[in-house]
Length: 364
Image (cartoon, rainbow, N blue to C red):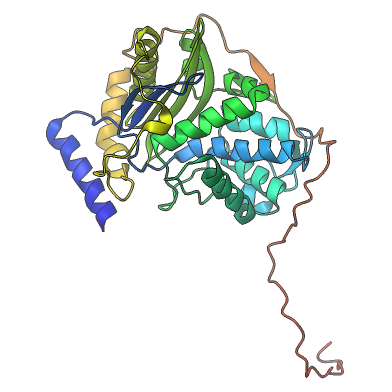
């Protein structure tokens, strides 16, 4: 009930004010850990496909532990193939490498591949989610709970801007050898070219990744990183109402950060909740996924449908994206040793007083 009340209040405020209310945000120096800006950093929010950052991190940890390699197989199960879009649409039984799976997650954000990767690493989605939550606790994401590997909406799957910053910083610091995954401009598969949903990659000067996310309840989310000179910054923007609002806000925050001094800025670990944060995450569905909202967005974009950025720091790309090819096959690495369970009933033990029955022709 409290979540519904919070969501209804949010929608009413938007309608009455005529303006979009900003979601949580945070700007941090990746090298020093100092926070240059923050707003509602501890407010709970649904992560949407930012969840796939943890999915990728758990996979990196499995590689580091020697369980798998980047060439290990990722098998598409029937369950994974049935995941809702965004998806690649590979048939059940298809096999690709861990390397290609991560490329697809970072660019296409495909839910079927996220589930396939989870099952292939941990043996089942449930076992993988247990790893996700264990890693979240280990690195200090104290207000985060995961329920799936892809980020499709579940009420119980929540995080905060502060926790997302911890995750992204941990990924960058612990596994810098994989940074190139976050800067991919596009992937190609067959005749299809799929561009990265992260518009900062092709537009923002110095952009270095990382990941976008969107669902109706969550809104438009972004973890965006950039380097200029010796400074390396990350903007966390969640709960915005359009792609443009999300990307404009992140770009403006990053530029402000590059121009700012951090002498008196607190460290990420020094941030504390205000004590006034809502207990439950807002649900933006009644705000974003309405005919009136998308009509207004369409009118703002005009007949061409092109994204209508207002930030001067997001100019039109000067060239076409350079794709990286992904394909099925090539899985020559070891299979994960994690136990696997088929989607069939688990047999019960035979009773101690069991008496065999002789089969008849009728009983077959």
